[in-house]
Image (cartoon, rainbow, N blue to C red):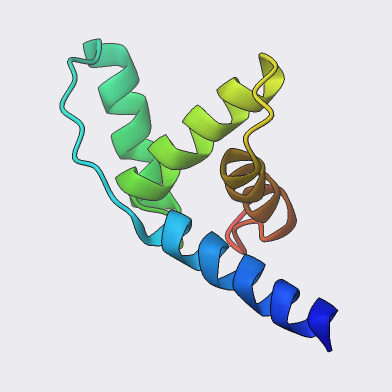
Length: 85
């Protein structure tokens, strides 16, 4: 019974972490912006937010990040690919 309660608490923490949002403003090169825009327009299951989250998570994991929340975003992106590819 203890394991069930602990599992539910862990799932609740993961949901809370993944629901936190932060607004980010940055400058992009025109080439990156146009490529991102073209990709999003040609892949209806993606938007600019999903693309940026996926790119950042991939970059962080590939460069040694071990944060479980980042790993979760990265793995979700790997195992739930866009159907339009």
